[in-house]
Image: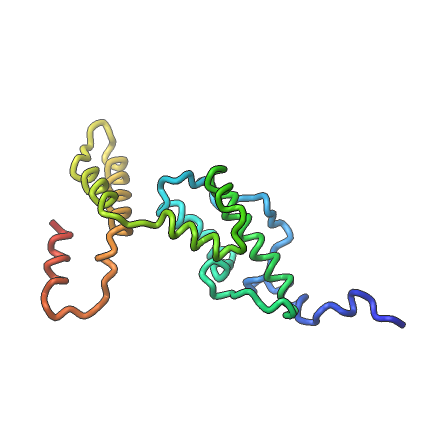
Length: 189
């Protein structure tokens, strides 16, 4: 009897396709037409949108497709087709989470990592102007007609955004000259 097409499928593929803890597992209800975040990125608020995307990809066990930890297997690998399906799904989710103009400019990327890297290069810019703008908002913020909880929520969001933009707060090197202490004091002021 001649081997059928099913007989020629790699033995590992079903295990990958059925193991929900495997990053290349795709639940049957997943759709390339869906978005993984309710917020569509339109060019503003990148850091907030980015956090939502990272959380959603983490929950779906798909972070490796954008950070390079799940590299594209060789075309002869038994997992190549499954990797390609998963990568296409992650790419679709990301594109569906972007405004039409931004998504159109990224339609021809080759994979999810390339798409993510392009978004990071374009929009994840912690520049002095943005830092100054947020600092100015904090300085000018008054409670006005806001209730205490609304005012607190607004100022807390601004502080968190400022902290994510200010790369100097990420420093973990050992300091012997005292500049790190001065910087920390300046941040508190």
